[in-house]
Image (cartoon, rainbow, N blue to C red; front, side, top):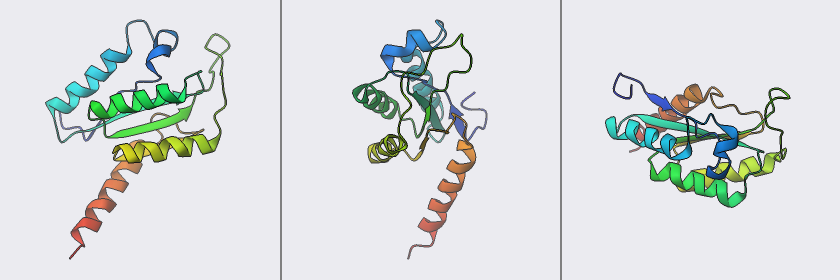
Length: 149
């Protein structure tokens, strides 16, 4: 799939390592997702890779930071952060409604870590027009580089 002509390969990590068994289907796990992202980048180094993290499930700051570090270690280019919202009463409860300033903090941290694009906010969803926003950002950056003397 990574070599079929895609520009962006998206695979969501969803949450921190500790919470994976409670959040994701048992057939998926943290390490598997990291391997998928790494494989996509190894198969096509020019491909932009993207992942998303839901906040508000009881994760700690240290766990979010560790997840971001793991994503960068696997050469993930784009990360999004959104508030977990319970879709039905049969799903996990929201542990915390994360303050918008904390989403800003994670966005700043992600940029410092070298993510090429970040979308972060309570209403951000994993897709969140991420492809469109990212490509607009990359095109602006490329145009600015071309206009340099």
